[in-house]
Image (cartoon, rainbow, N blue to C red):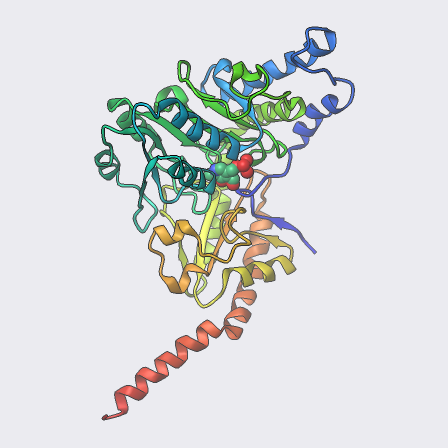
Length: 401
Ligand SMILES: Cc1ncc(COP(=O)(O)O)c(C=O)c1O
């Protein structure tokens, strides 16, 4: 059976060149980069190089990169570390209702510590109203936190414009760019962010390494205490192999950016065209203003989870939303915020392509999907309900009483 992996927003396969780059650090290059002897110096050079590679991809300086364990850690530090630093100036944070749980749950945690959080809504295409954002600013506002690309729908927010608003009001601006890295051109100098979060496993590096961009001059509390690593911003012996891998993945992403983005976009559009040609399938998210690799659709009368199981049986891996929320019974908070109708809220599936996705993969999905959809609809209690409610309407109309 063919295996097709279309869940790259959940995680990506580690690139072979990245494996080659990291292996020496599990073999002979075992030193601690904080040690001053030859073994430490050998790996310190590799960490410095990786820091430069990550910085280059986003037009930062190496000193502005803090390596950490994952995107969730970066979001936690950006929010909690900023709140701790700025709470004497005010307690108000502005974010959106469609952020990843790494931001939303951290905001809820900060509410228990005295923060007051505004969760901005989005329209039916997943877009923000910037006038609403600006109007939400008060003299207590200390932080704006808005993601660059939504992990479920791929919708893009105008980070440069939000950065300008934040600058105008002199408010710190954090952006979760975990899904944007490698798929959107990021220039931290241009877009006016103070803090930005990235995760290695979303761009071909292994799990367990992330990076937090901290603009020069921005003060931030550390979440982890006990050492002076990362300029005192993240204590703990560095994950050298992971960091080297992340650096290499960033270098590859920079080198191949135009080709990868163009290829993913062509294949995503091919998939989109085929899937939307099926009856009663709707696109979730903005038609154009979206990541080049993401397609989120609702299949009326079908449970998304059921569709995922049937696709899995023929080797197709997709997702019903974010990896972190699939497995929970609740509907997607992102689609709910977009006002997606209750009837199709549970019918959504996210396909997310990667640079390794081929036209064969897409065509295989387009071949396998229609019979699965037909079969599930035949079995669907949702469809039966729909028909029986139609019948009731007809009966009522002919009944004179
Ligand atoms: C937008 C976004 N932010 C944060 C995260 C968390 O990243 P990590 O898995 O590295 O903790 C994810 C992961 O899916 C994400 O999509």
